[in-house]
Length: 136
Image (tube, rainbow, N blue to C red; front, side):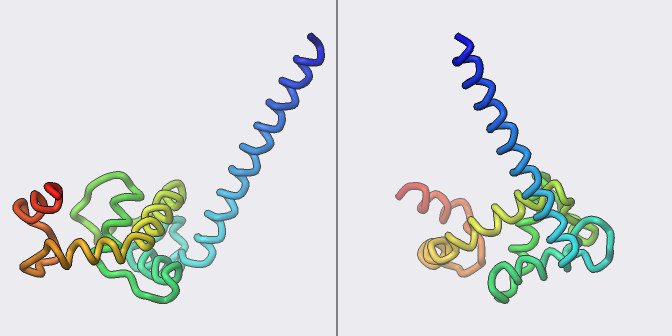
């Protein structure tokens, strides 16, 4: 019985250590992002700073304005139309990078879908085009 309790305690301790390490890694990530890209010293990344950060992650390929807006919305988990003062706070950096990397990994597929269904080359799918895509 004592052995089982000891094993359980060791597992709990290992789990706490793992959580601590993940938290520490995240703190280092946030610190690195802020020190590299927060040129204004605000403690957040402005629209322009997000643009530069995303472009660096995409190996110098500049992010479009729409891509930057999308990442900000995904990171903040709030829809906004005012991107003039939009920014990403440190607690949202992970969501921003996850959204951006997922998008970059699927960009070719997304572009192919738009070539096929965005017949008017508007850059968006209207209801009929979306229905055609979803009906496939």
